[in-house]
Structures are given as structure tokens and as C-alpha cells.
Length: 252
Image 1 (cartoon, rainbow, N blue to C red):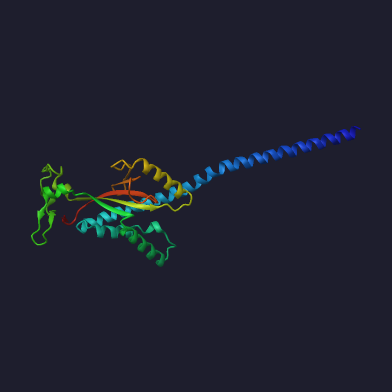
Image 2 (spheres, rainbow, N blue to C red):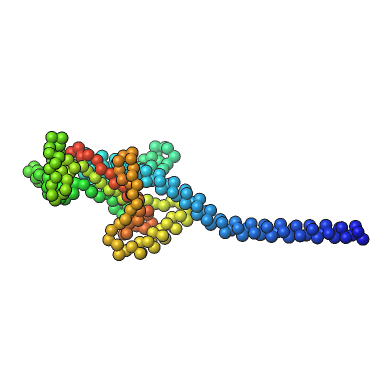
């Protein structure tokens, strides 16, 4: 009788343990199902953030090179866009081969020329600066801001309309806006949906607000944020601004 009682006790203990282990496994599965979406979004979001940071750095450098090109080509947008597209090639990657490099450059230039994806705005000189300092070139029929002997010109001669002197009027400042393709699955859908909702709430706004971060390497101001109507919502806007001392006379 004692042996049978001990055997029954052992059997009951084992059964209780199996039942407890089964419950723990069930709880672990439920916890995993609950946590998995958050971990997935966090992991994919980290990857997309890294890719976006790399793209933002590339766009900052491309803006700097576009400003340099504009300083030597009378601030012609076609030349600046071409240079911007050339420097945009690292965004599209490749395996290091010449063929992939050429394909990336071609794609960068194509997107730079696409007005729905890339835009360059000239912030300085302004129309008021042309009115204050512009000189009509009889040969070309264009209004120019002279840049000869700037060192010896009166820096205190600040005009009323533009609020700048001739030295500052000769500084080319541009702002580039590039619509970056979000590449990571799920995250691109989440961000696009969020931007659409924000855009719907801000359609009545006439101005665009950005978060600014200083880029000390090139003396450029890097901005990124949400634009009310441009670029298309499938793209995340990367906005950069940079100024460059002009080396040739700017044409109006």
C-alpha cells in the first residue's frame, strides 16, 4: 500500500510539472507574439534610419558641390543640378564595379533632372540685390552683379532694398530638396501613411517648418522635415542649404 501511494504521488507530481511547463510555454508564445511587432518595427526602423543618415550626408556633400559649380557657372540651375546628380550616386550603391558606378551616376543625374524629386532654389542673391547692385551688360543684355575688386569696395555700403552690401550680394546660397526613396519594407509604408496624415492636417498651412541641424564640415545648414505639398508623399524630403563665395559674375 505504501509503495502504491508513493507511486501515485510521483505520478501526480510529474503530471503537475508537465501541466506547469505547458502553461509556461503557452505564456511565452503569447509574450513573443505581443513583442514581435515592436521588435520588428524597431529593427527595421534602425536600418532605415542608418540608410537615411547615409543619404542625408550624401545630399549635404552634393549640395556643397552644386554650390561650388554654381559659383563658377553664373548660378545656372542646369549646371548645379547636373553636379548634384553626379554627387548623388552613392545613394544608389553598387558593388564597386565600373558598370555599377556608371549606372548609379546615370540614375543620380536622372533624378536630379526630375522636378518631381529634386529642386534647387537660389536663396542669395535676391531680386532686391540685383536691383541694388545690378549693372546692365550691353553685350549680353543681362543684368550682372559685379564682383571685381570686392576687397577694396566699401563694406559699410548696405543698401536699403536688399539689406546687404556688395560683398554679401556676391555670395551664392542655394537650397536643395531631394525626395529620398524609403527602401526598407514596412517602414516605408508606416512613414508614408504618417506623412499623409500630417499633410492632411497641414494643408491649410502656407509655410513649411523644418528641424535644423548644423553641419560644421562644410558650413552648410542641413534641414530635414515635412513639406506640405512637395515632393510626392512616397518620398521623404531631405532639405539642404549651403552658401559659396561666387567666383564669376552672377547673371540675372
